[in-house]
Structures are given as structure tokens and as C-alpha cells.
Image 1 (cartoon, rainbow, N blue to C red):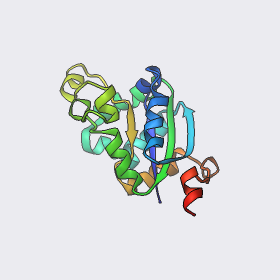
Image 2: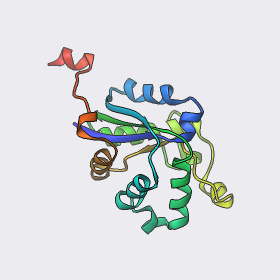
Image 3: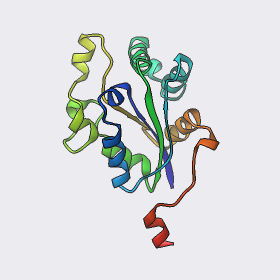
Length: 164
């Protein structure tokens, strides 16, 4: 079983989309093993975006700054989901990072509508509702960064009781 981090960004929380977004993962058969609302500080986001994601190294300080400031603009909901090929399944449900390119039926395709050129021209963050780990290696690092072991819970879903 794989585990992956998902973070509902401040725009998802402010728009009241948390329940709808979470239910999409549950309907896909993914199991929530950790869930919390938090307001991380600058150090937390720096580690997340640069030490794990290398955003400053890849895209520059300005992109990092916009993302970090946006993420600190309100609370976020962090969760750890578990399932077979969880990372790939979650990425598929979430949709393309750039909302304009996200397919209908994905979270970003259904609820976000901006694009990178527009936000860059306004020096704004890319409000795309959700963060999902990019790959299995990143997922392991992010889960460890966002959650203590004691905050992750082992349990069985109904269909797991029936098949074992």
C-alpha cells in the first residue's frame, strides 16, 4: 500500500470545498489515515517547497515566495491517504497542476480556472486548490514532514473487512 500527502490549500478551505474534495478520494476507495487543519509557518513551507520539492532551485525565489505567502494566508487541511498506487490515483483525481489544462471531472478541472500566464502577469500565486505528492519518493518525505507517526491511524474500510 502506498501513502501520499494531500493538502487542501487556503482557496479550497475558503470556498467551502473540503467535504466535496475529500469525498472524491473516499469514493475512489482511498483510505484517510491522517487528517488535520493547520496553519504552518514559513519554516515548514520552506522545508516543504525547497528541501523536498526544490521549487526555489527549479523555478526561482519569486515563485517560492508567492506560493509560501499564499499557503500562509489561511488554514490548510492536510491529510494522508493510503491505497494501491495511491500517488498515481490521487494525481489523476486532482488533475493537471495548471487548472486551465486540467480535464473536466478532475478536482482542478471542475473547481479552478486560472492559468500560469495570468497569475505571473499579476504576480499572484497559482490558486489551484490542492497539493498532492508528485511521486512515491516525494510522498514519503512529505508525509513524514507533515505528520507525526502518532497522527496516522491504521484501520480497515468496510470492503477490506469483507475481503480478508
